[in-house]
Length: 422
Image (cartoon, rainbow, N blue to C red; front, side):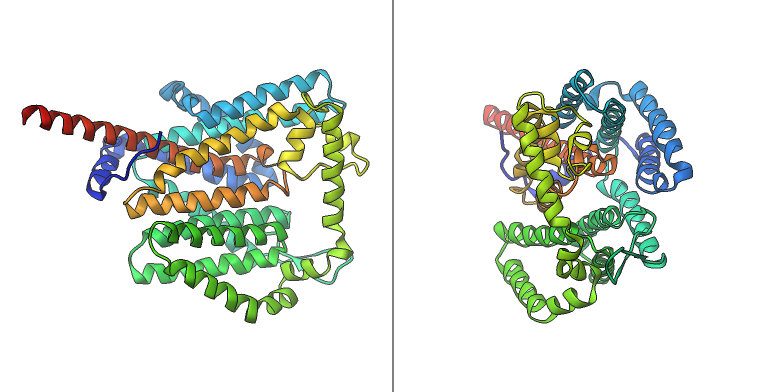
């Protein structure tokens, strides 16, 4: 069910009445800071990784579970991911690489815990900016380390890639892309010209740093994200952003594309692809994965078995192929229902008159389309940080939909009451 647009006044009144007082939300704000910094930043340090993943986050989960109960398990997305995890446990009976299967299942259970905590924090923290502050802060810290640490030389080619704290340029590229997403949302919701100017400057630094990671998929995801932003911004407002977007893209192509190709690491990686043969290798893995799926279309070859059975002894590097080949067609359908429900919820926000809510809907829509593209280059469902970001957007959409439904129900009752008195 989709809801009609609610007036700006009623929507603000609705949002302010969410949770009583700052003090009641403070424990969840503290938990949120611990989760974001622990998972996204501190887990990048080897000495702290296991403490965060196997100590701090489970303790947070137990504390919230004792206080909030099973409310977060009502989330359709979380239930679908739990269903995927349960289905994945069948792999224990036929996997050819049991240690890796167990490791993947542990990761998926960890992702369930992360999603649960995210949903609880989003429901109990009354203001969205309380949630955004630690997220933006942690990505700015990753940006800082990306700019201050030395780039690492790549074998067989004459350029270096920035890794920051991640020890993996592609992983840093994902983090910088997430940073771009959240900075873009802040840009749309901050009316002050000075703040907008600062955010544009920060955004450009994020993009330049992402170029230096050499991550091609994140570069393309960036183009998809901004392309969707321009498309959805014009859809219910005006055509000026779209015209401006095409003008910027034309100028970039005419004057900046050659510079990007010849003077940035990501450009060099496009030019020298025949040296690294990355694209060819991944195409082979996709074909290999599809053949694995055909060999057992309902159960797959078993989670964690892909690497052992692959002729290249490599992971699929693809969300959909990994699930399809490892757990079968039903698992893939179950996983994709998360995104179908996400789009269904967001359709409500894209109809709202409130600039804040509409802007979140635009950014959420643009993000998820780029996120789905990124799934073509890595197994997102096994990445706790990716699940944290997905769960954040999903949970905010769920919260807005719930409040919009309650507000619409209240307005209908109020209207019926007026008619009776009349």
